[in-house]
Amino acid sequence: MKILGENGIGKFLKVFLQICFWGGIVLLIALPLIAQIAKVHLNASIYVIYPNGIVLLVIVKQFIGQFDSLKNKNPFCIENSKRLKNCCIASLVETALLIIDLLYMIFLVKSEDIFVLLVMVFMIILFIGVSIAFYILSELIKQATEYKKENDLTI
Image (tube, rainbow, N blue to C red):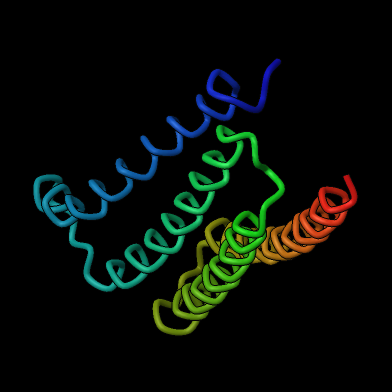
């Protein structure tokens, strides 16, 4: 299966991510209207949904840039390293937001729904791991880019 180039799997994934990105923006914009039609009162939940949604959209946008470089047959470039570092930072921000959400649910809402609390803890652990993985990949791409430049100079 072809990964790089115009007709690679990267093109399909980029289109999928663009649909997710623009759909996410439309959903965030239309959320108050959808909630009003469904007769759901968001109240304080709006302060949880919007920051989390924006951070996740930042991560999706960075991945769209990653797939652009695959399409251009240039996966080992410094821009990809920067994009992965941006994803790392966004994942850490998402972790912080999830911790705030968890503390809000425990202390202010006094939620006794153990399933929701366990899911929140799982999400926190997941995003910490994702952040570490993004950082490692960023450093790996950075080293590969430097190695590629050294080899290009010797040829």
